[in-house]
Image (cartoon, rainbow, N blue to C red):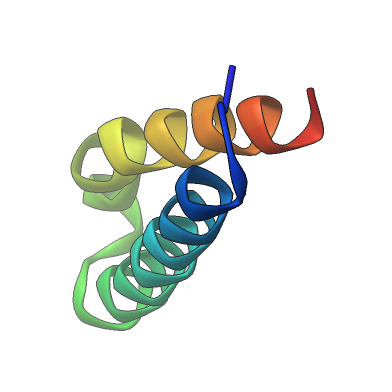
Amino acid sequence: MLQDDQELKVTRERISYLLDLLARLRQSSRPEELGLVAGGYRAEVERMQREVLD
């Protein structure tokens, strides 16, 4: 759980960075390897989004 507005800001910035990274990976990876390459980043984004929503 996020403790204050600063943690919220940093988490939202990190989510944005990872989403941009995922978009670049989507463009540079072959479709059959994208799931393997992006899976960890996607899981981290989903985890952080749950924290923001909570």
